Structures are given as C-alpha cells and as structure tokens.
Image (cartoon, rainbow, N blue to C red):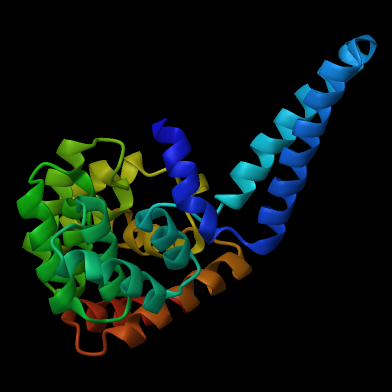
Length: 260
C-alpha cells in the first residue's frame, strides 16, 4: 500500500509522454485480461502478452520517476560538471533548515572552496565535522580547505584523521604534500612511495613530479599533453585564490619545474 501511495504521490510530476505511455499500457492490460476471460482458448498467448505488458509498465514507471533522485545525487552531478551555482541552490536551503546530511554539508563546503570562498568552506566543514567527528569525507575536505588557507599544520592533522577514519579514502599524494609542507620530510618520502602514478589525473602528475623533485631529487619525464592539462588545472586553481600563501608558494614552484 505504501508503494502505491508513493506512486500516486509522484505521478503528477511525470512528463506528459510518460503519463500517456502509462495510460496506454494500463488500457492494454485491461483489454488483455478481458480477452483472457472471454476467449479461454487465447489464454496462453494472452498470458505471454500480459507478462510483456507488465514488464513494459515497470519500465514506464522507472522512466517516469527518473528525476526523483536525492539532492546529494543531483548535487554531485552538478559538481562534476562544474555547475557550482546549481549545487548551492540545491544544498544551501538544506543547511539553512538544518536538515543537511554530513555528505551534503561537505559537498556544499567543497563547492564554496572551488569558488574561492575559503572562510565559508571552513565554516560549513566545521559544522559537518561537529555532526560526525570521525567521518572521513568532511575531515578530508577540511584538509583541502586549510591547505589553500596556508594552514599546513591543520591540513596535515585533518588529512591524517581522515586517513585513520578511512585508510583507502584519502589520496596518498595529498598526505605526502601536507607532510612535506610542515617539514616532516621522512614521513613524506614514505607516503610518496605509496603513490601509484599510473592512477593519477593530470593535475596529480604535476604535483607528483614536484614532490619527486623536492623529496627524491629526481626530475621525472611526463607526457607533454598530460603535463599541459595538469598545469592548466593548477593555473585555474591559483587564479581562484590570489591571496593564498599556499598558492603563492605553489605558483613559484610550478614555474621552476616548468623549465625542467
């Protein structure tokens, strides 16, 4: 009964073609059942047709409800497309109503970081961590935000806490860089050895190349198009944080390795 009530609740939000397809399918089912009752000899064929119609009805229902996804799912899709205003439009009201989940708060905070609003990102991440102190997602997000704020000690602490909460959920490259920034060089070298270069995105390759130079004294070759894509990413990020101490330092380092 609960499923039927939910079906009726969402039916008005369906698009017109889906409603029309549903009506046709239901009419055909009724007609098919009538044929089975009136013409017993046709029951085998009608039974097969009824089975196909019921499958079609299920598909139509799934298609009609295709937009009924959770806010976090919709927001993640917008985030991956770089549609940050859409993410905020979805998640900000949930934060204001105090109904946002830890994941929703973290994604909202990460979005503000992408837009260059580090203070708001930190504030929302603090709210998420207060809700779930051992949740790796907001701890890692806080580490990223604090890195751009130039608080390397804080970033390192949060990365390590996130790693403790979820050992496989925190990229070794981020932990390595944070340890390097606070002068824990030997630990950074150990983390560098855990990095799997073949799994890195272009921006990761640029950072990996930088850390290999600092921690191992090696200049590793990188494919030109990969390096260019990674450099473009970091240039865009640096443009978002023109006042960041971390950004200023990183900009100088990237310029230095670009000639190697």
